[in-house]
Amino acid sequence: MVQIKRLQEEGADIISVIGEIDASSSIELDLAIAKSVGEGFKKILVDCSALEYISSAGLGVFMSYIEEMKDKNIPLVLFGMKEKVANTFQILGLADLLNIRENKQEAKKLANELSV
Amino acid sequence: MNYQYNIGCSLNNLKGIREFIRTSLRDEHVPEIELSAIVLALDEMCSNLMIHAHHCNPDHMLELHIEIPNQGKFIFEIVDDGSVFNINEFNEPELDNLVHQKRKGGLGIRLVKAIMDDVEYLKRGNKNVCRLTKLIKAD
Image 1: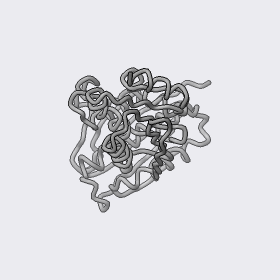
Image 2: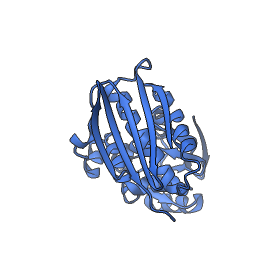
Image 3: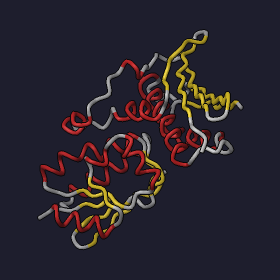
């Protein structure tokens, strides 16, 4: 249902989320972010360009990391969302609470600014 | 038009529910963004019921009904015989509280209420019916 790939670019961990995240698969996203934090990455980007669907279980994962990332000074930036996925974030007003950018370049720029 | 789908209470079946909604509404000219929101609301309601009323027991069944009484009006019913999980009795948590408590739940109810025009609960015989109504204006 969901496939998660990680690769590293310029000191940032990029987590690519491919497929659909619902109540049965949100744990995969949670584990991937936890692993990235655990491995000591100081910038975490989430590539949502192949994310076809997200339900509240997945949104809850991102929400649950907001404070931890602030405390540890690790920018978490999401990018590349399709409109139907972005709409889910907008319905809940999460777009203001999370760092969301159009593309990888802008996401890296924001992560760099935030990690200074 | 009427459609029906019966499914066991396993979270692995949520994908099937999403496909059922999409397939049933395929010819109804629902704009993609609205259709995605409807699919999401039904996924949220069914996963809530599966988790809270049926403890994800795959032998427990949910019946999904879709009724389209006239163009632009969609009635979705989820019928079960578990304990009633009435989202109207839950206060939506404030987003700030969710962030501070690092809670992963509580967002689904907020989504359903934001997407659907009406959420009501009724009894039919010894079954519980959760009825969600969505109105969509023609383009």
